[in-house]
Amino acid sequence: MALPEAPDSLENLEKKLYERSYIPNVVPRHTFTPPSDGVSNWNSPPITSHPPASGGETNWIWRLLIGAVIFFISTLVIGGFLLFRGGNIVSNSNIEVVVRGPTAVKSGEETTLQIAVTNRNRVPLESAALVLDYPDSTRLSGPGGAEPAPARVKIDLGPLDSGQTVTKLVNPVFYGEQNTSQSVGITIEYKVDGSNALFEKGHQYTLGINSSPVAVVVDVPSMVSPGENFAVKVEIISNSQSILKKIRVLGDFPSDFKIASSNPDPSGSDRSWDLGDLTPGEKRTITLQGSISGQSQEVKSLLFSVGTAKLGDNSALDIPYGDHFEAITLEPASLGLKISINESVGAVYNAIGGESLRYRLDWINNTNTPLRDVTLVAILSGNAFDQSSLNTNGGVYRSLDNTITWTKVTTDKLALVRPGESGSVNFNLKTLATASGPGANLSAPTIKVKVESTGLTSSGGGADIVRTVLEQTVKVATAVEFSAKALYSVGAFNNVGPMPPKVNTETTYTIKWSLLNTTNDLKNVAVTAVLPGQAVWRGQVSPGSEKVTFNEDMRTITWSVGTLARGTGVGGASREVSFQIGFTPSANQVGELVTLLEQSELTGTDSFTAKAVNLVRRALNTKLLFDPAFANDPGIVVK
Image (cartoon, rainbow, N blue to C red):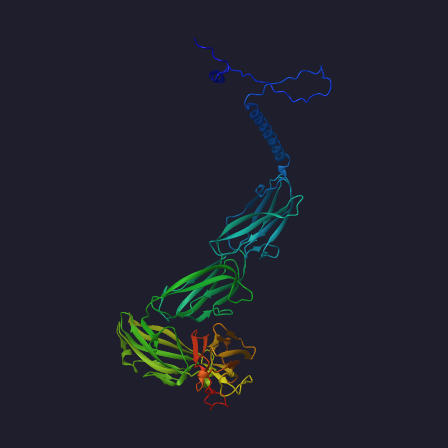
């Protein structure tokens, strides 16, 4: 017989634990009551105890309810703040700027812009202003006509209430070249109540220039031969409905475009024409005759710009209205020419004073027909050729106009030149010496040779003349003389120490550099030399105005001359500087000449020829060749 299970057995406890209807036998907990010192209060109500809530369900439910209440209250607070306080916040996005005007205008015509500013904030804008930034060339219409617009135009708008719109009209006159654009910067400045800060809202208005007030029409041939004269016709036509003031035309040409004549004459420079005022529809014409040098198939460009004249500058425009560009291609000349000097071909040849120049003129018939009675004329000009050295080699020289002429009389081949046939003539001359004599006083010494060729070609019932012109320039370099001397008894300083130099005893020396320059300014000139290890830089320089420095690390002495003006030392004082060094010989140098200064080097650039100049002078030693007291002294070191 099985024994009954104990009510508190583990099996029964486990079974009850998982029953849904199981109610645990909870032992009540009582509030702690201290023992009484006197008679117990029999009338006190009984202490009631309650079982605790099962698990933590009550705690998290209460937390959820409390969080919901806090969120609700926060929402009310924030919403109220935004409703009652947030409406006073000013935002740039609530300031509306609307510009009504054309998207494109004619340059030089008055334009009306309507600018409307609306305050869509809930609060007023204080001290509001409209600020306009116009392009530089803008004019503003006024009672006296259009005047230059200030850099910034400020228009007072006053206070702008919430919802208020203020409209302003402005009448600018925009200028610019056709198919360009102009932009107006628009800024709204304002303050808000309770703040001294200045706030801004920016806006940009852009319009195009669809027509220039002036039309530029240029008529030139598309192809010309090198040196051939041709006409250039420039028409300036007013498209404006009002008078255009102080019109100027500028020409931008290659350097080898030579103007032979101009109608009207240029103003101020040979590439500027002041036409005055142009009435509506008026046309002015500029006619040029000129020629261009260059190589066959080379493209040259001519640019004409028109606008208003800039005061104080004859070669600039104040307000540009437009421009016109034309390209010209150089075609082979009917009678082709080529000039070479000492077998060098080019527009410019750089020579030195006294140099012999051998000119060779090559010619060729580039046409399909024979050329008869060809004539070659070389016209010599400039200030640097020695007439006495001229050898024409068969050409006829006229000293009256410095021309050399070759014809069929002097050169048989010039009587008839068949298609493709070529030949040459030559002459020789020398440049003037620029180191001394008359040539030393020249300024920018130059020799120019202009060669003109003519010939006859049968065409139809008559003969046509073909003409070719070619030029070449010789630039003669300046002559620079540079000397370096070591001195003891003479010069800028009192030197001390034994002469001849003695072992272990210092002797001081004066080093003197001298410069002479004849015809052209020499720029960026410097003289440098290295001080040997046994020499000492004494820091004495004369004159003190010259900039001489010593680099101890490199042991380099540098004279920063800068610009050596033309004519320095020609009929006047040369440019000189002196400095002092010390030298102490060693015992192993007895009986020797010892170097005091390594070789001196001059560098610079001829401002006329743009060629570098470099001169080197030998090192200086203890043999003082230029000191009158010691010129005959051997200069060797003694014990």
